[in-house]
Amino acid sequence: MKQFLRRLAALCGAAVISLTGLSGCSESGKKSAEIVTTVYAVYDMAKQLTANSTEAVTVRLLLTPGGESHSYEPTPSDAAAVQRCDLFAYIGGESEKWADKLIDSSRKNKRNLKLMDSVSLLTEETVEGMETDEEEDEAHDHDHDASAGIDEHIWTSPLNADAMLTALCDALKLTLPAEAAGIDAAYAPLHEKFTALDAEAREIRDTARTDTLVFADRFPFRYLTSAYGWHYYAAFAGCSSDTDASAATLSFLISKVQELDIKTVFYLENSSKKISDAVCRATGAKAAEMQSGNNVSAEDFRAGKHYQDILAENLAAIREALN
Image (cartoon, rainbow, N blue to C red):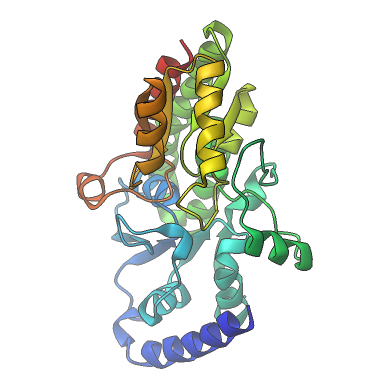
């Protein structure tokens, strides 16, 4: 952690130097409003909410499309973008401590939206059979920060996504008051979509033959499963640094798939699929993808894939798996 903070201090200094040359982005010379976001789900919501703006609005995703979000650290260019933007929308938590440091150093008097504050938080949990990261466990044992151990994947349930959408809508209207009517107009159908997805999830829950999901991968969906009472087994927790399962974990997942007559085993986008393929070979189950919404592929980014469509695809996969 000390090494990270030293790197962040150097980064802030580099960003300040970079900003001195950005006269085109000064408050007096800026030609467009700039929104900076840290994960794809929030980026896409901000893009949709500002799509009808009469003035130019730039929405930036700090993650490189297709990149691994859990190992992300801001570059000097990223830090400069955060420092100069009109609205910085981030998740918060252990993985984004760098964001709090940047805010403390340069954005205390600017508009920042910490989206963890818009939902009820859950702690990351270790379920039966799951690999544990001893280094992370030790760090959490000695870290008394309130964010330590919090599951940061807050956007993965429809109602949480809707709460985040509302918070983002309010922040954007404060940032762009002249665009409030257009932002409200864009908000209404998105709000209706997330509400409809919640109703669909409840219908899946109430009609399914089983209530247990198996993830042969990381598990970033605790908010989703908790919201609808679904049980799960997984190889790793959502923010685990591990990617290779031990023989014991692999054996456990295979036995659960067989014991519970599980027809579908899930893997995440950008996964190597080694674990899911091994479980499926041993059990005859089918492998299916779930998308976390942390990030998307370069192809989906170019296509402008919407987060509500990602949620809909996840629910369709869950429906098939539970029936």
